[in-house]
Length: 206
Image 1 (cartoon, rainbow, N blue to C red):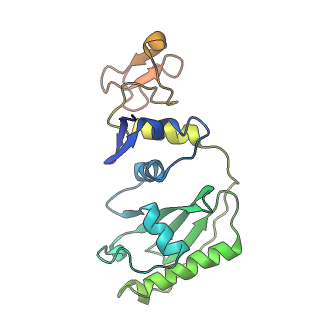
Image 2: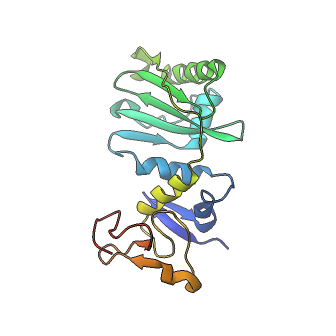
Image 3: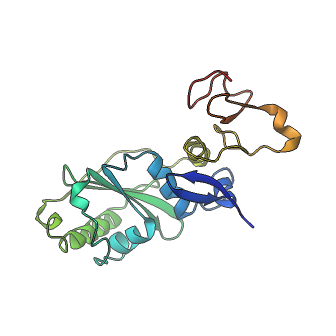
């Protein structure tokens, strides 16, 4: 049975999900959403869950988030599972009224237009957002490289449960190799001896 290993921004993530970014398994929606929440100011950024995002942007369903005042946020971020084989990102600036779709494998114009069309359809059902003059903003970015280790590290640094793995690289430690690890005396985070002489979170000496 998989037990909860991370508690990140109120997300409970099981040990199997925690280990996925280190291996080659599919990273699930809860792990992606927890990762996005680590980078957002929750007072000004709305993180849309991936199921809702799929319904709105991919399927053109306007029946979601009726009670959420999206116009009060600075931006909206959503991770979308495309073709059940990779994750893409929608970034909407409510301030500049811009819509950005980012595909780590490279954007296809047809897909960008579909997502934008469905966003416009959704805003037409919103009394305030429908009056905004929305436009597509394309961003240059490098083609996908593997960020699994980085995702693992970010989750570890932002987790409230952190006593069985290295906070930097995310590798879990066991009794037989615990001599390779050291704990921060202040925040109790665990690191490999080789990573640093100071805690990467609170900057205390290890």
